Length: 273
Image 1: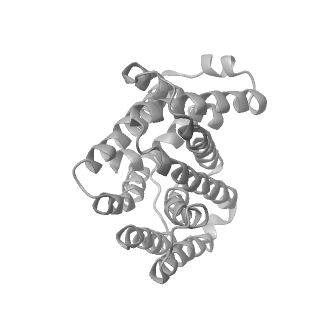
Image 2: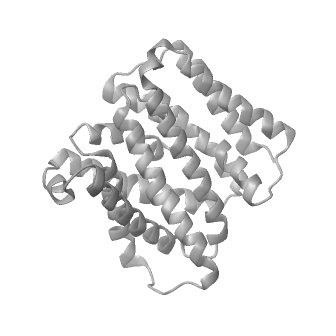
Image 3: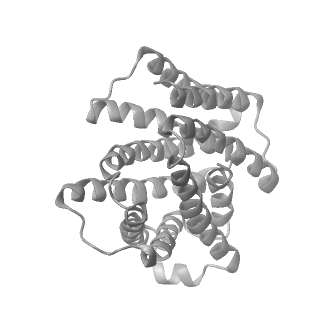
């Protein structure tokens, strides 16, 4: 959770080194692909996995990364972005109920409503007036994360290294094309990245995307999903702590109250059957 939470302040730090946000996401996915492909058995999966694999790769590899770094790029305050990312879980539950016909209990609906209420409370903070675009972009990121989780349900039988390597390749190609169209010459951009930028990219690709997630997958081998998932509520806590040490950012009382509501609601959503 420390590694996953560090994605937000370290992502902002990387963008501050003059890396464009969409290119940052593209290079992060490219690093994931290059690191995982040597450990994959390259073979065409059965046809029934084609659509879920492509959907997962587009929404997770391209959608989540693009909107995550766009939100961090336009935001001057990182705390609302870090907390808002927690809405990925309520979105995933709602989308699963629509596409997978998974029932949502009355208690879960209350918790989903409470999580959005916490974000609304944060939005009333006077310091957030100029951060609305960043919050809307992180909402889009959370929505794409929810969509990716629907497709990932159909990929449980595939090797996780192959799934993530394919996601990295698809994410890199899509985001590199979008970066070329909207941010300018990709080759020139890459040549302009300094050492701090590359270190941040390597951290995002290797430590966060690979090590952080692989550690979670490792836990799933020994513990029930319901016991592991609630710990996801900790990543914004670590993210806010790191934000304080890196940028000296101190959340306001309203942000703290709204954050407690969101994090508690998401934690209980993980615990509720």
